[in-house]
Length: 456
Ligand code: PLP
Image 1: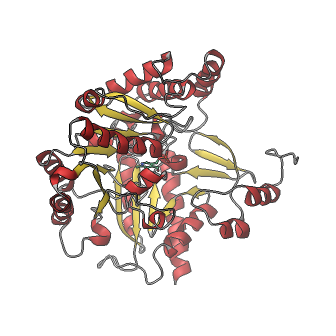
Image 2: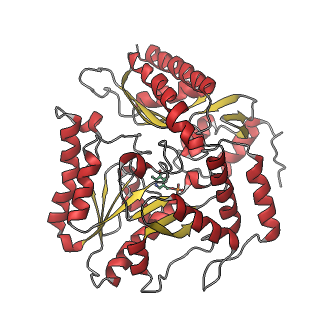
């Protein structure tokens, strides 16, 4: 047995990693050529790698470390909970204090009458729960044929077979038999790439009305639900035109279709309110949460159901659950995370202070020759890279080539930004300071300059 620790040389760690660890969304060729970056510690918004580099994490891990890294309070709560009750399940009429407290807290925080929580370990699992929940809901109402769920191309709802089918990522659909039957996709409200000559408002309406067209084609008595992220995250931080959501809601209401807001990224302060639904004026019947629920300190996700959905499902036994649904340690950590978000007024600060500051600084990057657009709400934003700002034209190179170069320049400049095709993404910890925002923008500009120079 090899002995492996943070003192093991980086090249050795990378070789063992490449030999034995199959990474999500990573090619083995890339790993073999360059090896994975080994992260050893983190504090606040800063990562340290195995070579001692200090890296500004403008992605909050995977859009999740909302309160920043290294909060002792969460470690202490987890240690205490492991001693007191490391595990008990919530099946077969049992419960425990952390899950009761967290469910009650989420009912208090969630908007409208979203008052009942079904726990999972991740956003993917929560969305798989949603597929079964909405179909079971309609069956309980005596409409078992209402089983089609409408989603959008380029949406991301997770990686399980169900949630991956809900998502609209064609690269994922090409592998492993997705989408499953009775999932239908419509166009996304991505004006910059797909809006052509339409104004953003007209395009937003046109894309929303694709939902109505799909409902009428499929048959209103066959459609169970529409699912969408309030703001698409993994698809490229695509902020929909203001006309989009009101029209979507008119349609879901008119045809009596359940609306599922996937708030896995937009929840817990990311958009400047507790939930993106509040920021965008959405009234969902079901909300998916994960990521910021525990700031990534523990794996936990959930579906929050409206009173009507919960009451209907309560008519049957829902034959569904995960061993770790409502895991006590994850629940205790999530509660502590929420306490910190509340007590330190982190979300108000995002809405009123650091968010507007980040927006101003981020939008200043549009003077760069490569940047066609900066979209940002709260603490999630994207830059569209383009060779021609006037026409919003894509690059001649395959989509993503320039984004990849830019991301590599960011890495070299000790800044984690992600690229989605040729959009550069940020989603930093909500605790980022103005000084750190300045460093983020300075490093992003330097990386854009280097990318631009590389393309000349
Ligand atoms: N839904 C959305 C909107 C997401 O962004 C993600 C992950 O990025 C998921 C669902 C899946 O969550 P998880 O990776 O926790 O399974």
